[in-house]
Length: 106
Image (tube, rainbow, N blue to C red; front, side, top):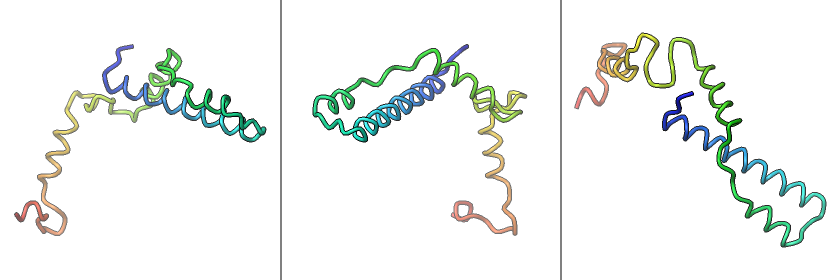
């Protein structure tokens, strides 16, 4: 599996979010059970956020396979055309009703 910088960022953010949720759940569990000891709370809150694991990479890979058909996550459709070019041509197209946008009028 080839990871781009964007894929690595998404995987890292997903891992960080999961770790933060686990920390929040642990904190809620401890508080709900009356454990208000400063050492316990400090240990939970200072627990380092783990880096992303192979499981996280596998999840990110599975999510990327679920991308809408006809498009991949690289900004190109399956024919290899750059989607940003298509968007630029749409911006240059005349608007409905024949009125120019503020940008075009300037």
